[in-house]
Length: 561
Ligand code: FAD
Image (spheres, helix red, strand yellow):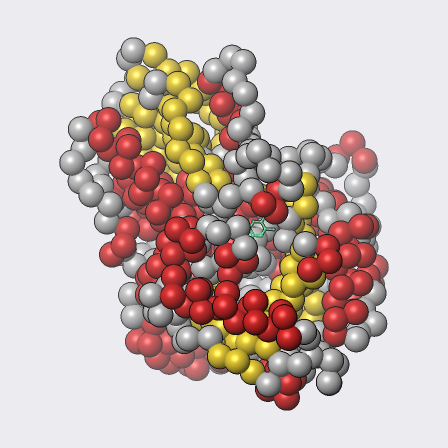
């Protein structure tokens, strides 16, 4: 049995049936990594589970991370030893559960002062020790030329050596999708574009008023327990369930700029550069044939929906990367940019960079739990904590099984052979195969089948690896309803392509229109809506040359699609 998330219509019907029939054991609010992890854990323990996501799956912080599955070297400074140990263990487990998606990556930490060398040397010994020396490899000291070789973009002679240590990288959205697909295989119901408008708990159980955002239809969903896994929106949901609740969260903002690999010459190694004077770090991470340049947190008090990379963020990243690597990059070189908000639990200390990355599970009202904080890397442990508590309440004796549940690929080597064989027959190049496997694991063969049946094996966007068949596959099997779902999350083209996947020659609008029967005007509205979303996110216009001709529509038509 394969397939993805199943039919959205029937998922909504099943949720609606709980109003008069049997309630769910558990309703999960929020389709980021935390909610997805809880849905899988609970479904695998035999509970009946529903998950509703207000926008698209992973559209919150879970698509805006630095894409690392890591122990978190910099948490050493905060003496978060327990968290680091837990994160190292989870990283190693995730590598085994999702080897097609969680890849080891060497990190170079260049140092230019003797004092820094001693400090980081001690820190890295502690990092390896906390992972019980089970890190992918133990860290190593490098001399100047060795650093230059691994990070050729660093101007020669500027550093006095450094260290190399090992962590992992992933595609955060695809990790969420793999966890959700597994949850659905265990019987969970998952629906995106379904927003919780009200939450109630009483003697007879809990209920949520859910709006299908596509049709504005309201559905009453009943469940024995509800868990709110709504990331930075958790306080809003708590306020729906309980009058006068105090905010628990202090969101912090992190931004990333994306460049072509030849613009920031790195090898396969990432660089981790402490900017001691401003208490921020700069990561330079090779990712999907591009390079992510990102920073750590700054305090944030702006709107929670659609955070944007502002001029100051861009200037900080550009100035830092230019100064460190001796480059002359400008805003015109930015291929993509994104901002994310970290759901940090409010603490007493001053800066958000000092707040703990730990998670908290708490009772909002009887029967309604909340969970927030934590990291992408530790989602499985977070889920287990929440579900242990719920299972105990419901008298379910089963223990957490997710340690043994593979995510998307049961045998990557055999899979590669099978997909290669099929791709060769269809004339699909090897780099496309690599990317397909990374995105869909065992389901890559299904994507190729769609491509062969519909004659859609050419690129979705000229010069990029996703194939046109992915538009249909994601619409049919992964609930991609909008251009943004397809381009920002399922394929990540909005991060990698300066024209965000809607430039000249893109087949995405026409294929999504075909899949959902959009009129020409609806197709034009969808393109415009995606353009506005990405321009707001980047804080920059899409590259003019790549923008398609202005759609021939009235302004009153805008806003849907
Ligand atoms: P989210 O992903 O935000 O999910 C919450 C979901 O709830 C959203 O999709 C939202 O739409 C939904 N929701 C809200 N209201 C409602 C409603 N009314 N009804 C239904 N649904 C609703 N961690 C790592 O391990 N590695 C990293 O490299 C890393 N890098 C990071 C870099 C940055 C810049 C940031 C900000 C964080 C980073 N993190 C990293 C942390 C990690 O990304 C987050 O901890 C994690 O993604 C949070 O997931 P979540 O599911 O709790 O929240």
